[in-house]
Image (tube, rainbow, N blue to C red):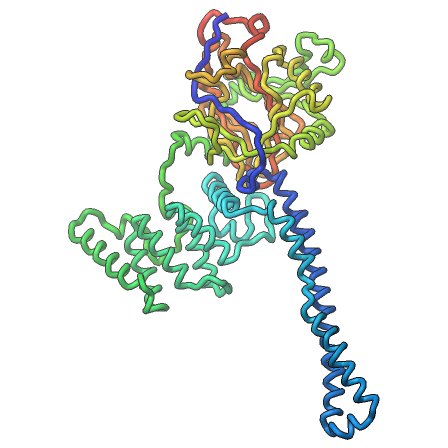
Length: 537
């Protein structure tokens, strides 16, 4: 049988050592940080108690000695005339003051600093903070969330006390600004200014906020608003080193544009008195051609099928063509889509199996990587934000049982399939539209086992908001449901790739998304799924 190997770059995920700069990509591993922080808070409180105890003892010494010196200095000779007082003076200065000196020099912070040092190696770093900030911006774009919604903790379906301060919003804007992402810089620095104007206290000055915002607005091409913001900056800080020059430059550019009548700034841009919000400026286009369709599906917009097509979807009991292991307890199978056919299996994994798989995978989770189509080198990518681990049957009987179940359900051999991959999505975790199968040039393992014939995807958690699996080509939206699994073929029976199966994992808005999947390869399926009569059967 001809093994036809097709389509986009082969996506490989590797499992390596965990680095600090990847913490934000897995909610599962971020939970450890909460317990670390709790332990540090306990350590901090112990340090505070020790300091308070030390200070209390020093205060007690000070009060006692204050009373003593008041009496002794009122009549020094009379005081020392008594031999006991003379002795006690010698003792105090020789022994007791030395003890007090030791008490003052003792540093109760040693234990706390030692605990901090021990845990610091697991702390997130600047890259983590930047990655988490970008994740919020990704969620903002995908789900059309205003900066104020985030700032006030208002997310779809929930209200939270998790709020962003002026300084938080400003730091978000600075992250975007430093990446030359002026679109998001404007949204977040504007929110910082709005909260400052409302009287919220902050470390950052209003002048700094206006400085960043005016230049970002200028970069978005909105000269009238850049001028208005720069005038505000000059008014509160006339000696600002850049504001005066920027103002003259912006005004010159605006006069030139109006004189040459190249564009009417008053109609091209909104009134500068109106607040900047989502939709004020157009988000720049990026590398993904189906960005708008993909994000609309993630929001639950568009997609779907006609009632006539929906009437052809059914549910059934599936016994794997009378497989002995499924006869007594067949699988519950539901049609999710008709063409290409996507089915969902209910009760595909038990809670016990899910927890065991997560337990085995968690220590091995490493940032998911993709193969660069130009260099062939495995690398991380912003379009895939998750951590993954690979489990073998030798890792535990649960893995072997799950593999056997997948083989029984699909009727395909898993002898040539890849290991069971477990993935956990972090803050704004996603996997943008991609194919599971490969096109030329092939990796070496494809020459042995063939292309990825089919995908069996287990959902191991419910997700409060976001995290759907979507197919932009035909509009299918599959919501994650704990314990269920979905299955589809990536290749036609001819071995040609089914381009309609390009799919994506939507960003997780609220919750933690765990999945495991099995990529089933061509080799060994020759008589289990024979070739059709045409290329697209």
